[in-house]
Length: 225
Image 1: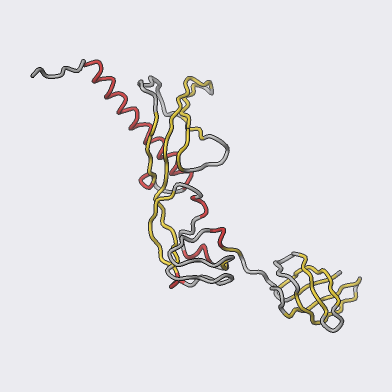
Image 2 (image 1 turned 90 degrees about the vertical axis):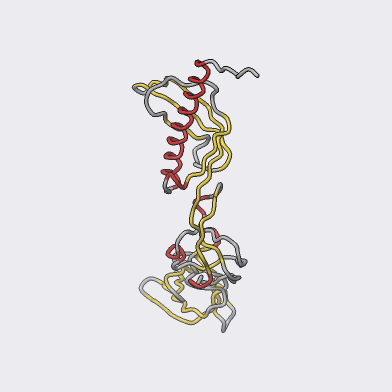
């Protein structure tokens, strides 16, 4: 049986392609580690389609993503080589990119409008390939926030599940301050909607049932001008 002979030139070409892909993987990992604020070792990268020949350009290429917003997952990127701001070469790559990131996971159901307690969550590393900025990674990120919807046991916590609680909730007993020039009147009322600092909300004066719009100026305080 005759041995298969591979031309030396073909072997050199294959080796050059391997070295080139290894270099590009390093550059792409560094790019996404900077974008996602993780270590390069936490970037999961697969080059799915690349040039079938070695690129003879010196220096590190600049990496350009499609669109203005950074994203993960399957995508097309471009490697660009410049000399004194003049574009020398541009190559297209199809890639899959994800990151391994520590995320918070609910260990029990958490009701709506609740502050999360430390015993209700655990932290684990997961592979993420979309909405990477939306994941909660530390307990400190939950300080001063409450859930905006119910969270199921085993569900990964995301930023859009939370918001700062309103200073006033619908149905709260409040103090209404009516200002007219230098005259200031204060009387008790009831909030008819939730409100945060500086927001306009609907309030009611119970003895007469009169409804008015006022601005939230503090916890339980609404001012009407």
